[in-house]
Image: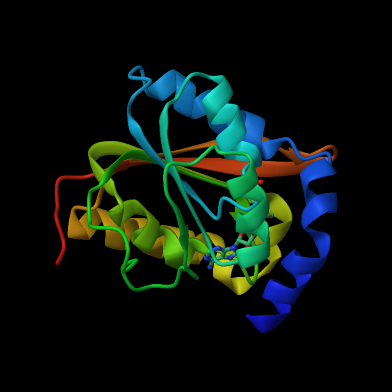
Length: 196
Ligand SMILES: C[S@@+](CC[C@H](N)C(=O)[O-])C[C@H]1O[C@@H](n2cnc3c(N)ncnc32)[C@H](O)[C@@H]1O
């Protein structure tokens, strides 16, 4: 965990300039799904705000961000994209600053990877979304070599979410993380269950 914080302190500027594509894909999907430009959106692992900026450019007005790295969030704050930006390392427990079912949709772009957010964190992310809302989560396919991202882990996670009533539908589409690096994009719709 400490290693990741140091990594993102060192590379934050370069990260903003890198040739990633996932954020464009995630934002296009959200834009197609959400008609109301005043919908409340949470950008999870928002980093320097690259994905949030695209949401703003599409006309979304009410975006919050959350990230575990202070240095990344400082760059995002300079851009004035987010109404609130929470500093928190997301795990398997509910996020203390965010009540269940707060947002119409949540994005998690480029952060589905080993040592970041895995399939095991999907429940925590999906809880932030209102029933009927969406979580759009991207994951570069090279992650599938790791146990946290195995097909079995995904199936178990989706089964649990559906059993709990937290997920009413799940879809996967394949796109790019960056050039020559394919990514899967998961689109999960929040079910009616409310958890304590
Ligand atoms: C590859 S960057 C993606 C940033 C952003 N989504 C974008 O599109 O520009 C990964 C970000 O995820 C954050 N991160 C990784 N694991 C996290 C966790 N468990 N909770 C919160 N943030 C996390 C890192 O601090 C970093 O800012």
